[in-house]
Amino acid sequence: MRVTNSMVTNNILLSLNRSKLALSIYEEQLATGKKIQRPSDDPIIAVRALKLRASVNEIEQYRTNAEDALSWMTVAEKSISNVIEIVVKRARSLCVQAANGPLGIKERQSIVTELKQLKDQIADEGNVDYAGRHVFTGYKTDKPLTYTENAKDDKFTIEEKFGADNIEKVEKVFNSTPPRKGEIARIRVSYSKIKYDATPPNDKLTVSSTPSKQLAINSVNNSTDANAYEPLPGTVNILRDTGEIIFNKDDLGDIKEINFTYDKEGFENNDLNPIHYFKCTNKDTGETYENKRDVIKYQVSYNQNAEINTLGKEFITTDLMRDMEEMINEVGKVKGDGTDYDNLLKDSLRDKFDKLIGKIDKHKENLLKEQADLGTRMNRVELTITRLEDDKLNFTDLMTKNESIDIAEVIVNMKCQQMVYDSALMSSTKVVQSSLLDFLR
Image (tube, rainbow, N blue to C red; front, top):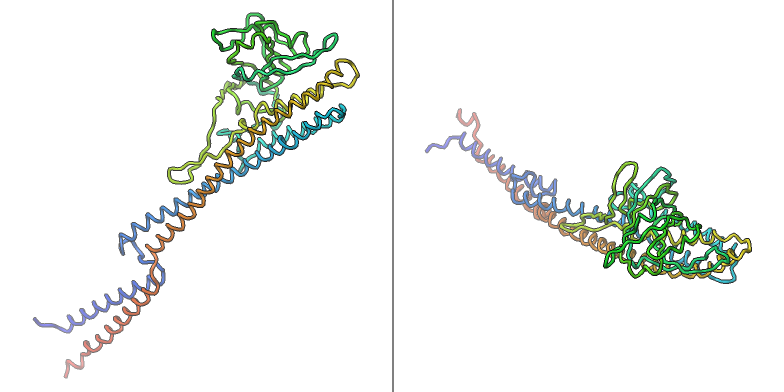
């Protein structure tokens, strides 16, 4: 076989190009710090790199979700702590002062004035928001927990359920001749100034008992009406102004469960918004709201969700707001005119404040329970964030090992390849030395 000069030259150039290409690969690796520049360089590394990058991005998104969830819960926890400070510490301290016998009516009125401010502050804490979303209202984040201004045009039909344990016995001062004290049995609905129209004795209140029993609604009274707090056996009185259902004590043994439906119109500042507390219907729009427990969850890891919200109705309860409202109203009844009725009201205030202390202690237990539940969930999210940070470090390290070069190794290989290339250039000059003059000789 005849080997021509052109064949030799072509082979030498091909070898030089291959050597230059190998050298350029190491140069690119050193310049970029990456093992491959395109998927075709090494499909296995490329596929693994895509998976690891996707994992890192996923972890970063989970971490963002977890941090956002923790921020939400931190806002809620601070608000609950403020309510505890208001109710457990300051309000209880005021009640202890008011239960002190030597205090006069003016001093107690000053205490009640502060209680009004504390009640308003509790309502404000219930309306706290996070990035424009109310944190205590479940899915209805655009609706405040309490009314922030008068809503005189709102009209709702509200359904409430009560059990026998909701019936309480309280002392009342009757404006009779002469004035006297007496014990009544009542259920207090969640609002005062309710609307309830009935035609006695046809309308009846059904109580769930064995056998089933109905109590006739004898009359629909205001609390100042005669016999408002003394219904006949087998009947109940509905007091619209105070929002109370008054029972005869002889009927208490038959009561197991009561469903009571009434209307509420003309909400005032800091009144609880019924759409967050009850099954109710807006009488103007016909929109119905269900009393459900809305749970907001953030996905903070693969197949792991964190419940972030606390419902306002679970710690700013209707009983809490009504207890403070009732105490404020009781002091307002005392006129200081020196009458026997007024003196009895004044004497009863100490006992009422004393009982309110016991109620506040129960509210305290509920508040602390909600705070503990939220704190437990916050700890879980914090642990998740820590784990996600560790996972990100691990996957980033794997990604670096998969994609990044060993600089020392690449430099050595590049130097070796540079020597190979230089040697090829030198040898090619020795092999291809013939010129046109050599052929003319």
